[in-house]
Length: 342
Ligand SMILES: C[S@@+](CC[C@H](N)C(=O)[O-])C[C@H]1O[C@@H](n2cnc3c(N)ncnc32)[C@H](O)[C@@H]1O
Image 1 (tube, rainbow, N blue to C red):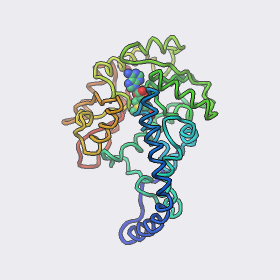
Image 2 (image 1 turned 135 degrees about the vertical axis):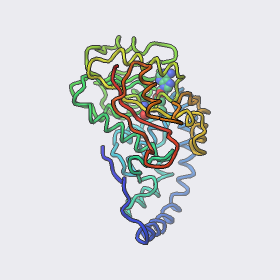
Image 3 (image 1 turned 90 degrees about the horizontal axis):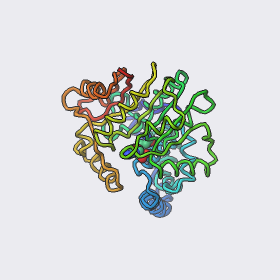
Image 4 (image 1 turned 45 degrees about the vertical axis):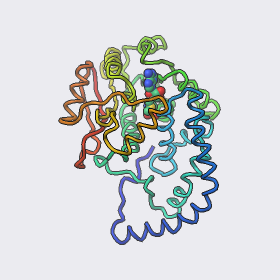
C-alpha cells in the first residue's frame, strides 16, 4: 500500500491555472454523471443505512470501508481488496459511489493533479476533516513495522477493514479478528462472495459489553506465550470508559514479552461532538445509526501526558505517540499510540 499525494508542488499562478483546467474538465463530466448520481445516491443511502440497519451491522465500520474505497480511487492508497469487497457487499454500492464521485475521479485522472479528496495533508498538519486518510496510512505503517517480527496479530473490532488480509497473506503467523457477530458474519459472507481468500484468519464474534473477548480469543487458539501485535483502530471512541480500560487491561494480560498494542484515542471534546461542526454532524449520523461516541481522553492540557497516564492505569507503558495536527495551532483531538505491558 502506498502513501501518495501528501504534497502539492503547485501553488500561485500555476496552481490557479491547474485548478481552472480541472474545473473546466470536471463540469461536462459531472453533467454526464448527474442522472447516474441521482439513482446512485438513492441506492447507496438505502444500502448503507437501510440494509445495514436491517442486518444489524456496524455503520461506523461501513463508513471506514467507504473511505478506504475512496482512497483507492483517488490514488492515496492502493486497496484492490476493499474495492472487490465493496462490489459484493450488501451495505454499500460500488455503482452508487462511482456515480457520486466518478466525475472527480475521472477529472483527477485526466489532469494528473489530485482533487481535494485525492490530497493528503503533511503528517502533523491533520485537522478534524483531514484525519481519516493519514490515520489509515499510519496504521498501515504500524502493521508494516511489526508484521515480520510478530507471531500473532489480533484486531479487536476489525469491522470491514481488510488490512490483515493485505499484510499477513503467506506469513507464518496466526491472525485473529474480533467484532460483533452480525458485522463479522457479514464480513465472512462477503469475502466468500468476492472470492477473497481469508482461510488463515480466525474470526471471533464477540460483544465487548456483555462477554469476555479474552476468553473467546484463548478458546480460539491464541497463545499467551507468543509475541503479538494488537491493532485497535477506531474502536475505543464507541465504548464506555470502563470497557475501554477493561479491554486494555485484558490485552496487557495477554501480552508476552515484545508484544505491542497499537490504538487511537480521540479527545473528550471530540467525543462530545464539540470539536467542530463537521465532526458533530458526522458523529450525529453515526449515533442515529445506533453507535454513539462514548469515550475520549481529556486532551485540553497535556494530551501526551493524559494518554500516557490512561495507559498506565491499564497496566501499559507508552512506547510511541503520534499527535495529529501538532504542527497546527489547533486544539488536540486525536492521537495514535503504541504501548507495551508495564
Ligand atoms: C469505526 S469501526 C472501526 C472498524 C475497523 N477497526 C476499521 O478501522 O475499519 C468500530 C468497530 O468497533 C466495533 N464495536 C463497537 N462496539 C463493539 C462491541 N461492544 N463489541 C465488539 N465490537 C464492537 C464495531 O462493530 C465496529 O466494527
